[in-house]
Image (cartoon, rainbow, N blue to C red; front, top):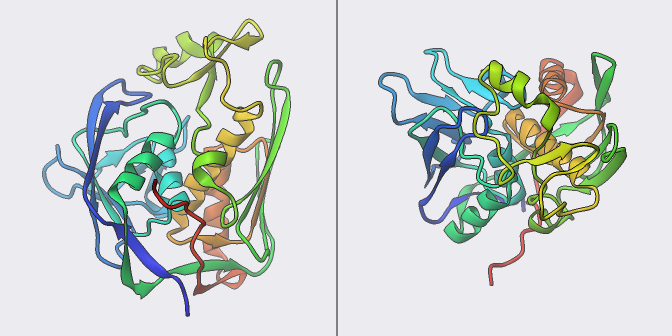
Length: 294
């Protein structure tokens, strides 16, 4: 018997400022019917304000993933919530927003995972389906490369390399066998103090602070609390990849391998996979391991 689709058991609400817009937004999660997927709804807009979370609706991948529907309604920085939904086993949910960007909260997916845990899960009467990778698909952008290859389990294999204090870091994460809340959810977004003025000149990073970003300055970490993991930077890149890959519309059963990945590379890989119908098939999908509350 296949695993079943799940939605949240109860509505849940979270508010905070967007990482790039700096605007305060209220986010309300509501249960959704089977096969709905993830649908963002801009409650502050009239007309067509529903934005399905699919790769076809990706409009921008500059320092985050932005979705836009045909009417022009947008929602920005969706990747951390998308990763939390995958990691916590939520297939169907309506995400209502009164602003253009999801709350950054602490810059990780941990607040979203905690919100989903509090809301609880409700099993639905429809089987969960996945996309089984049948043959290798690769993309290259600006000398960076990402690959999806056949595997028995959904694996994230990520390597990054920056100047000190980051250096070279790598992580391999099993989406089914890992503990999302412990292993990945808490890894925060990061940036360099030297980039602040440039970003704010183009209206980016307006909500960034030491409360929601690991800041690199003078070859060290500026945050007084330091890092949550010794390899937090690689873990965050794996978290971003999990969220971006979720825009395929179903869990991808295969091995994702990337060197120096980013949102543009991730979404190019998703598009390459979905465009090649011979490279994948739909099948019953197991659920990720989620610890019981309490």
